[in-house]
Image 1: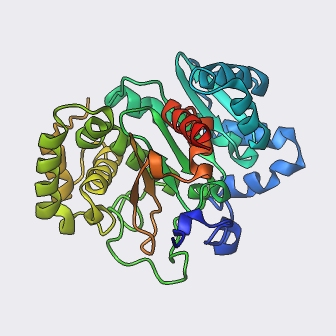
Image 2 (image 1 turned 90 degrees about the vertical axis):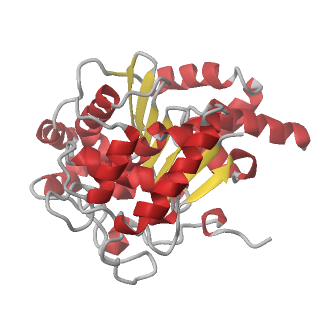
Length: 284
Length: 50
């Protein structure tokens, strides 16, 4: 069987630095990020610029996280298997916990972003809550085979790649220009454009709260009903959304949610509004 | 079995929905280490089948 692009041994697309700057961000942050290797004080300055971690989120040590995760995974697998996986695992550089929810950042250069990341997570959970324990991670792009965002609807597990903290790419991984309308207006090129990481994170949250995706994974009886309507919706609105959203019913919901949420429900995008009306999204 | 949604945000690589039963070992390990019990359970099933 031929291997999919994600199954190959090494990254298929250039790292951020090769695409024009790893974690290249708007000044003045960019220059300071580059300087993090110069000393801990720079990291602290960066953290202040990027904003504090909300107080309900407590940093926990790698040792504590390791013990907690070992206990959690040991419910489903023999402890020797857990330790086998642990042996190959690159432990997160930063870990924060609030109740049952956990956020991890594996890339040390992005620790200063914890405040913004967690504040955004808080806002999504505050306005469009999920019932499950959140497990959100920022993971090295080379570890996840070309994915930039991954989620398991019906759970609180999702992650984004660390290269989403680069500026928005202007070209695909194979070098072609990104086509017009590939993502929603609030993404690549529209007014009020947001950072790529924020867009990816919000898009993944859109998957988590998508009733069809969630109910499918939970085996809920309402799945087929949601799925039928979702299919009608993407047939009616997919082309008007974004090229990425038009690719499937689930991507359409996630793309519409990213546009709608990141404009605080103020988008004038007709297709995003149609999804908001269908799914009853309200900014509250 | 749960579906994992994998987004590339790249025009050359469409988003995919992957059944955890068909997921690669690196993906399962990453998901388990990110706290997914579903991925942990699938890792155990594969180990038992070996």
